[in-house]
Image (cartoon, rainbow, N blue to C red; front, top):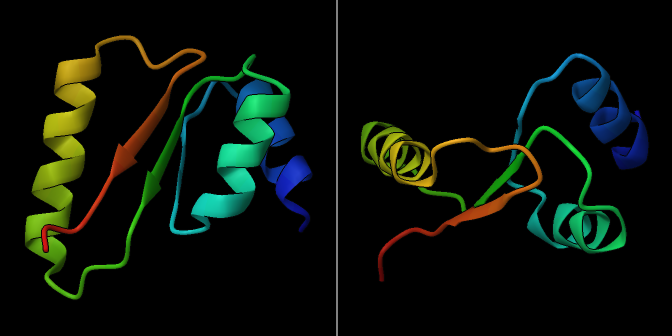
Length: 75
């Protein structure tokens, strides 16, 4: 499914997109910031740690409508 369709569906369903496809979804956010939220992540094989970073980012952001959150793996 094309990324535009994923974002369109998520927006219609009032759902946030969580993706590793950072480049394309950052571009889509810049083109149309009207959505239910986009969270872009770098890949991290430590899934529990990544989940915790995602949780913390969501908690800090509050309402995700129209927001782009970046959750990066620590160096």
